[in-house]
Image (cartoon, rainbow, N blue to C red; front, side, top):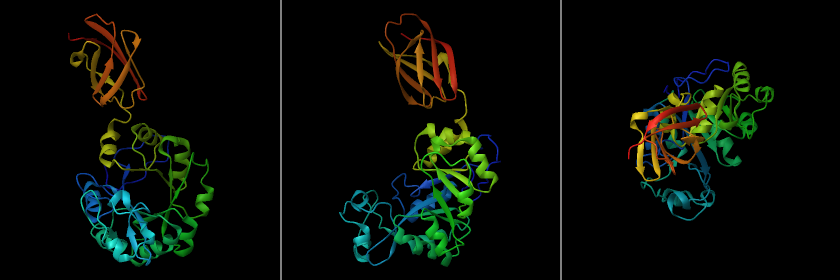
Amino acid sequence: MAAGSLAAAPTATAAPTSCDSLEVIAHRGDDTRGIDQNTVAAYDKVNRNGYSIEADVWVDAEQVLWMFHDRSTFKSTGTPGLINQMTTAEVEALRYRKAGSPLLKLEDAFTAFEAYPETRVYLEPKNPSVADDVADAVVARGRTTSTWITGYTDQVRAAQPTVQVVQKVDGTLPRRPRAFLRAGVGIVAGQSGRLEARTVARYQRRGIEVQGRNIKKTGSWRRLIQAGADAQLTDRPAGLVAFCPVALEDPRIKPRRSGRTGPRAMVIRGSFFYDVQNVRVAGREVAFKVASPQRIDARIKGVRAKRVRVYVRTPNGAVERTVRLRR
């Protein structure tokens, strides 16, 4: 997967996105394996893995800017309060529940970003009162070529015309990008599961990139990849990287590795079992659970044969093979 800072936009056709050009944007940084969100450690890990950084900005009662997602501090820190009503000293005393890290100031985040000047950074002000200050900070730190501000587009462009902006879109993207071009929008972020290849290509031809908004579901990732979009924001960047190469693959069944795990349970082994829609055993539709991309657990009843015909349908296609049951 290409680094977020180097990811090139796919060609403006209806062709699926290449995994080499898909920009993976880590929501709040990469906070897996004991790392707190919106911290230097989370941003450093994003950069090491070749993703882009998405971060959130709040302001305290003394107008100091902080990298933080929620207005309420309780969920992340266990300390009740509203960050925009707290003093700077009170915010400095907060610690994340997960790994005990202190909250990070915007100025310190920019200092960390100096270690990876080419990596794309997306900053989302969580309140309109913050947007102008964030835009000013982007200019003051010389990050106008590698940093985008998400939301409050008109306000940001009025305050700092050189700052790049991302416009969120609810529902389906407008068929034509004229309004976004007039507003100086370089990137639109739409709902991944509702992107259409023809519309995406039209935006790309006019120089506007198309991103998918934060989502964890592989079905929406598949739709974005099929539509030829440029990027996906996600809480699961490693999962998206693993999914992309198989997003358009046909399902497969390995007949010799399938069998029974109980009197009414059957294991179906194979690959690319993402978002399975239907399973039939010996011509009967059965209840099932996708245990992993390589395994389906199906509930069968009244099947006595040693060999049965198994059918699996996914959004990428269907496969049917004879499978030997192990008694």
